[in-house]
Each structure stands twice: as structure tokens, then as C-alpha cells.
Length: 72
Image (cartoon, rainbow, N blue to C red; front, side, top):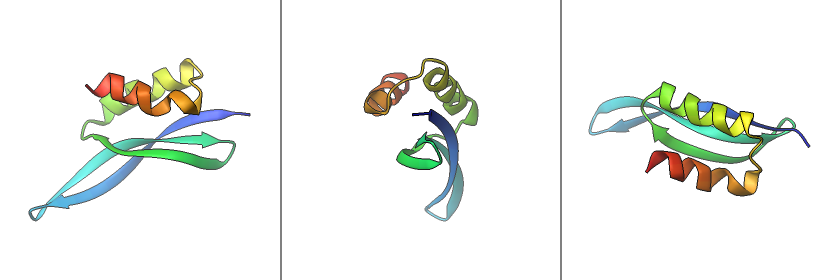
């Protein structure tokens, strides 16, 4: 089972102002199994978390907890 985390980009609009936000998708093989949207407006911050998840081979069951720990 190959687990890979990748960055996703979303566009949101708040009070007529558009923003690009970044999140992370958890993929097992070619299937996205879980997604966390709107983690940050800063892509570099999300890349850092994504790299940690991938390098540490974090199981999907801990995905949300790890992201929460890094964003608090």
C-alpha cells in the first residue's frame, strides 16, 4: 500500500475578495482517500507539512492529527 500526500489548491471568495488556499490530499495508490482543505494561504507552509508526512510515511489514521499539530 503506497501512501502519498500531495498539495491541493482551492480558490475561495470572502466578501468579494478571492484567495488561493492550500491543503493536503492523502492518496493510497491513485485514489484520494482523505483531504484537508484550507490549511494555509502560504504554499510553503503546506509544502513543509506535506514533506514531513511523506518522509515519515505517516499512516492515514494520523493524517489529521499531524496537520492539526503543525497548524496550531
